[in-house]
Amino acid sequence: MGEIAKLQQIIDESNNLVFFGGAGVSTESGIPDFRSVDGLYHQEWDFPPETILSHTFFQRKPAEFYRFYQAKMLCDTAKPNAAHKKLAKLEAQGKLKAIVTQNIDNLHQMAGSKKVLELHGSVYRNHCVKCHSFYDFAYMKENKGIPRCSKCGGIIKPDVVLYEEALDQDILKEAIHAIAHADTLIIGGTSLSVYPAASLVDYFSGKHLVVINRDKTPQDGMAELVINQPIGEVFEQIK
Image (cartoon, rainbow, N blue to C red; front, side, top):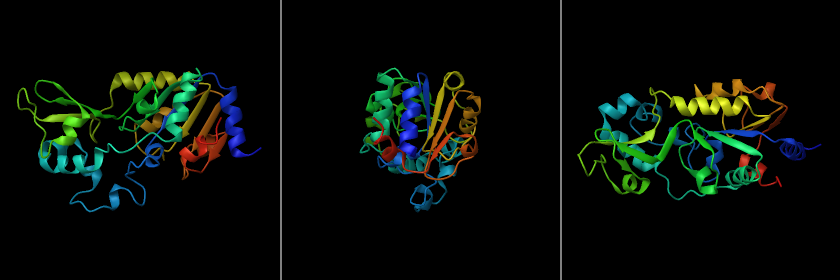
């Protein structure tokens, strides 16, 4: 049996499917991946992205932080690809119970998914650090320089988990619960190198573990099925 046929069989047999995804799910939609050869690491900035996207850097050099953030993190041209759409369809059918994502781009929601647990937050939510007023994606995109609150003048910070910051504990608990109760876990588009997010897959004790990623991952040896292809191309072949 071929890889796609095997994946189809696993999905058909599943009633409590959870998807755990990373940057590779969005690269086919045109969102750059930090760690890929053509990703953000290979573009010209005074500091590496992991330094810029840290809590310390945000506080010490907000102007440089926002120069990078507005240029590289606020992508409004990306559209959901076949993977996003198929996952939304599986949820509508009652098979998929949750998407646990490391992405911050809202593409799963754009595709129609309802239960999306965003471990690292979202660029579509932003709040003033002083009065906590909410600002949307468009406001951040239109503002050049350091975005300021129109009510109190405070800096507006994206609801994105920066390096050195803790994950939202409620989201984390929900993700652990979903993974622990799944009969099938599909890991897609992630190298499983970012912690603590990557450690969540250790809570899975269900029947089918599937890994769909271009490169090898630490979970490959544990998986029933490993497909080293772009995830959008894989899901395009699933009925």
